[in-house]
Length: 477
Image 1 (cartoon, rainbow, N blue to C red):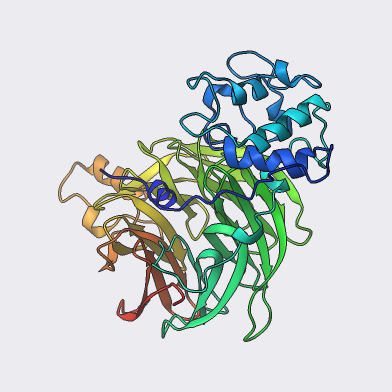
Image 2: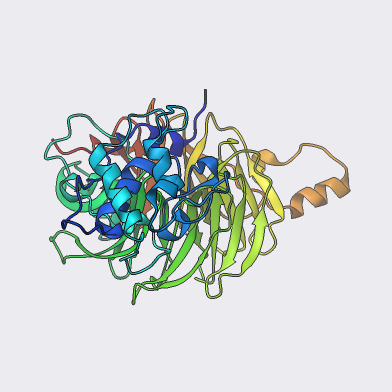
């Protein structure tokens, strides 16, 4: 059974619940932010968050906690816990109705916290009622990378930095830095994010952006500064905390704008200098799996598990075009070198090429042996990685591939075929692994391309010759 890259990666993670208060911090007082929010995050949000909305009821923000679900009953009745659906479903003796479903009842101390909070007026003591409950919760001792990895973890994301001299890989509560030519560990950057899903590097400033989180619980976007030559990266800012894991992040080519998408279906665009949110959109009915900017910094494209892609104007957030010809979830999207076309790919095992101005289909490339999980453009090369363990290199410029030209056909058909742009034919194919490939990154400066696989290995190749340069397990040991 073919499973998408994101589903298989997220399902293999050990979900670690945030720390939960056993009793209110101060006797007689109950804080939503300190006492109630951690319980909702750890015990309730998996089934009543952005990804799953059982009973049409959500608890991932204070505001949503007050909105009735499909029953129509008020979840919270300030001053009266016994008349509040939220509390009654925690203490009912009916196992079919009791929350959490198919799990042990909440500890009595946690139920008492919720009872006291409602009886005392269900007040809010946070800065923003619309903020995710995850933004109030400190993961504490759980936010620690293991000293030694007992087993390799899937390499969900890779990125070259320092002109291709260093390779960053996503780890568990950390980024790991490697020498791409020798496979030697060069550094470790601790992070509050449980699992890193995407890394972006601004080639001009050296800044690094990272997104990830805990599936169904929380997500986060971090901006990281370079520490200087030979020094480790320094985390400087958390730009946003979300109600579910964040999946993709990209810098604009000029490094001034940052875009991120996630499992909550959102697209967020930030000003890098100030760290402030420029605009947010919820353009898809499912996960936003990839984001990418046009070469002129004016537009960005999204890919989604809802089988669609969208193009937006960066400055205004206005939708410019959409593409709906994918028949399965879409995992990857990049612009062509001139920005006139977009390449997208996913579970339908095809690279689609379409006009960025209007979404009109321009062609497609077939012949893949599994889900296409990532695309990366480097100069005039387009790289794809696939569930069949193969790294493929395509020419990303426009034109009809010689192998795709029909041998004989009427003159009118020939003219039509000649004028219709197609993704170029395959220029190189490398069987990198017997496992799924999840990530790919390339550097023109160093002349290297690297891919990451499900078994925790990183495979590095020379761009020009395609010959292997290094092969190593990206897990500190």
